[in-house]
Length: 442
Image (tube, rainbow, N blue to C red; front, side):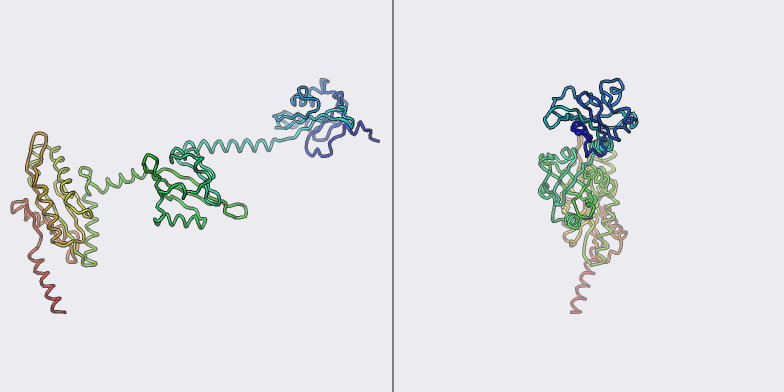
């Protein structure tokens, strides 16, 4: 029959996988469970009755009691600690040690219960998670991108530290809010924005969506965002997670490279290659719908003599000055190009011959009205302009260029500083014939 004293020192009924050892009031082992014996490689016969103060007790379970700081604890309190411990049969394990005083019904101290719970798996998982989170933070700090996450209502719930540097906003001011509330600069009427909103509405992934962010100092930054929907185990939408970056510098570099391929490096005007592509488009349009356009081929008179006498820097300076004067006379929608060493072209779309001649004459006068002045020289400058009309009869780019060049050559042969329209008398006669044909038909 179990005595009351033995009941007071019995093992807890719900010890589970915990290692448990119960000591009596004299610090002798009164009971112990299987997991405890396995951890220390002991049997009941070797542990039961052993005093914690004995050398063998000190070498085994008693050291756990010391680690739990029982001597420093209040007599009526339970104490616990967590640490790595080297067990004889388990090796190093991360455990929680609990030491609890045991009392009888009258409140008298009867002994101490020592329980040890193995937390190694949870601890290792926690350390792995912390390491993963630290690795994630390290990577997010190194890369130029900033990371973000939205909840199911498309509110920001996470932003990496890089966000504040790139966007000029505090994360605390952004978390819990939707992007539409934060960036009014977005053009929500644009087709790309509407398509992006459709992706969000239909919970689809998106890549490279771009919008403009205007910083407090007025600086504009181009932001590119990519994201993937977050789904739970049941396939329910839980938000978005993705990455964003400032692509302003990359876009400017791309534009710069593109400009180098399409513009003259000295004057900044459209170069010959880009001009020919635009001319081809205009010729195709004229042949398709019968619309009328014009080409002015502008050649600088006596440019070689100026270049030879005053040097190439003076020649470059003159070309820059002429570019500015011609640009002021061309219509905003016209194409002004440098097509040769001292040759320019003005491509005029959707205009009559009278309009073409007016622009050509204003350009000629703008050049000849003022002397070209350098550091130690001042010279008169003039241009000769050959004009070719582009219409359904033009047929090809080569034919238009040849017409404008021949008109310019003829004008220069006549003394220069003048305008000549290629085939003007013939064109007038043809126009009159077409008008007569129209009248007779009607």
